Amino acid sequence: MTVPVHLRHDETFVLNLGPQHPATHGVLRVKLTMDGEYIVKAEPVLGYIHRMHEKLAEGGTFAQFMPNTARMDYLHALAFNHGWALVVEKAAGIEVPERAEYIRVITVELNRIASHLLWWAAFLLDLGGFTPLLYAFDDREKIIDLLERVTGSRLTYCYLRFGGVYNDIDDEFIAGTRDFIKRLRGRLPRLYHDLVTHNVILIKRIKDIGFITAEQCRRYGATGPVARGSGLNYDIRKNEPYSVYPEFDFDIPVYTEGDSMARYLVRMDEIEQSLRIIEQALDKLPGGPVMGKAPKVLKPEAGYYYSAVETARGSLGHRLVCNGDKNPYKLKLRSPTFSNLSLFGEVAEGMLLADALAFMGSLDLVIPEIDR
Amino acid sequence: MDLVEQTLSSLAKIFPEPAAAAASPPEGEGGQEAQPRQRGVLAVDPVRHGYELDVLCGADEVVEVAQVLDREGYFLESIAGIDWLDKGQFEVVYDYNRLGGEHCRVMVRALVDRGQPVMPTITAVFPAADWHERETFDFYGIHFQGHPNLIRILLPEDADFYPLRKDYMP
Image (cartoon, each protein chain N blue to C red):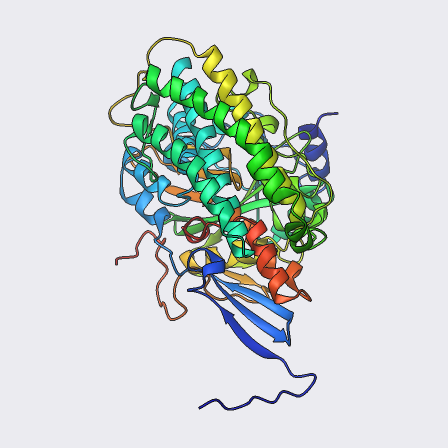
């Protein structure tokens, strides 16, 4: 039996979004205080997939934590592998052969494209478009197959090692990657931009909606495509170069509008830039070993270390504290979407619920990475 | 004047005494320098450690330092707790960085007594600190005085333990 609800005109009600809701892409819960269709207050509630990776890090050796890194951001897992490898290599003073650095960049960038493609598919699915998902998954599948060939897994990679990578790439991988670059470059303008980016329905849904200012990004610590969609030219690959990124010629797409469309366009342009990086890396790929000399048991010197990498969602930082033992004394993971999501409450205030969901999609949330 | 020097000169208002030149970077036994300094700013080798400045201050000074860094255009990257069980102290580490342009990572850290872990909140300066402080409270039980909503963030709301304390037994 349904009982009609009568609200006074100024009365608000609480609407629970999630933790099981298709638009939150995982177990995120948002407690919304609504005035009709408008949001009065939005309060994200976290922790539904919290696994305490930081405690797990303290309990094992440095190498034992590597598989955990991929289980946080399962869409750009190789960047999390990379971040962990970099901070430990910095602390322990391990050298990485050049070929391994190139392979790291190639695989991390392939993974970044896969992540952006999945975001694109899921974002448009949120907005009610089903077809784009089929196109994006078709392309993403090619990347996953390529990465499976060299890493041995399809999603939760444990491919990087301190001092290199676990497996060399072969001619078939190189040929397959070149084919893929050609294929995606052919499909991007036609299937992605003509069909979706210039689509009037999409433009109406995300243009001029969900404004984030550059100052808001700074106050909340938002990074990645969220910051770059608000006019901040900040990408760790350029600002604080690591690995062999300085050897490649690529641009950082920046849009100043700050709306959901700007963030959309940043990611679409980043796919093209990643293709450029991969192409150059394949052309310049040096020979040699893929594993450097690294001690079996790592005991970095006591001290504080910090290292950051650019993941598909923003700046991932590792604050590592060692006390000279064979396991980390303290590891703090600064995950990008944790900070990116923290501005949701402020921006979503006064928004229509449907717009807020489109806005949330444009933040590219990966919940296991927020909850860690 | 490059950014590191500019930040150093802004911080000089709080820390007039330059850190002793002889003081070694934070290395040695237990992650502490050979001769522990009480407070001060130290330039660190960024290639070796990944950050430029190491600011050690009193717990009551973190807000002042945050205000200086806010004026200098920094953003708060993260807040981490560390449990130094042997010394009976908690350490709270704030990581600051710049969004674009020249970069300079500043690590601000403060020690508090393990028996009475109370820190002032910096949420009024950086709203980003809201969730990070809640997380540090969640894992270490460090109370951030003046925080608008200091409740658990990642653990269940009825949890009665602080899992990242070194003496925590599951």
